[in-house]
Amino acid sequence: MKYSIFHTSHCGSTLLAVMLSKSVSTVTEPLWSHEIRRTENFSEKLKLVENNHKEDLLVKYPSLCTEVAPFVEGKKIFLYRNFKSHMNKLAPDDWLYEANFWNQRFNNLINSKDVLFIDSDYFLKNQQSTCEEICSWFSIVYKPLPDIDFHVKEAGYNHNDNPIKLW
Image (cartoon, rainbow, N blue to C red; front, side):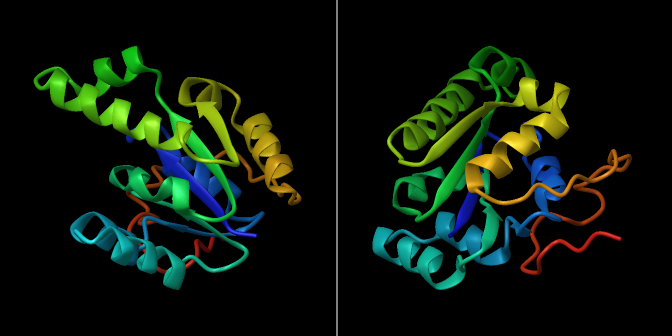
């Protein structure tokens, strides 16, 4: 089975990926995934996914790559900020641009199959139980981590082709 995390950006998706990394081999925004956005030919985008997203691997895709979600095999998580929260966090200057992206990301996942939608506010308040729910959805055993007391992006877990390796 292949597993994916898609998200609206700045919503806790890297933290979620790190928390799941003891339960399933996990990569967060691997370098090849950024080529999806830079590639204009849609069939080439799908080849990138097909050639790189391996079985028994959880891939956290960049937020700008939700267009491929309907075509990605396996089970998906969509971690999202609700619209108001997203706009308050990201759109003080260019609200129309951000509103458009939020809508596009959400619609791409609505048009996908095998998706579990998770509100980021709920996840951030209920991290362990949300991870248990996700692992149940993935049909894998959840291996909990102790509370994470470091900034996961600053620790270098994003933009890496290698699976996350914690202590």
